[in-house]
Length: 171
Image (cartoon, rainbow, N blue to C red; front, side, top):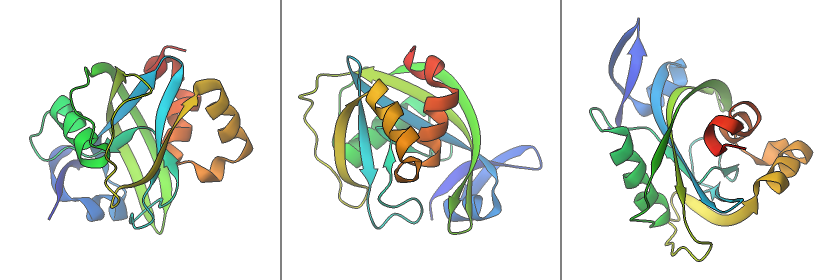
């Protein structure tokens, strides 16, 4: 059972991940944005994901394990999802959002956000249980894509780029 830190009646405690989303509990999360200049590495979530399958998201995101440090979680998930190791992650603060992610599930997250710079030739090994594709896209082009077809992007990526872009990307 995957236990993640969630708040129940104002107290942080370990709760099973699916139950957190079913109950819409506010919980901790981590998001990573890997950049190559003005281009962002985005991923298409695997078809087998229990929510938001096949949608495009930021480089990676997850929930920290109980008592796991945010930076350690971010590094772990880069390796787990994309086979990326050794990036210098920079914490850029915290973002809070709440979004319906379909199938009766809600994300209500307090997110520690990390940014890293890498070359577009960054070596990756995709975990097919997590990610079906990746691509580098210029931020301006991504914003246009989201405006034209928001339904192909995760709710959190849309929120990050419309409400928190300056904090996360400095642009």
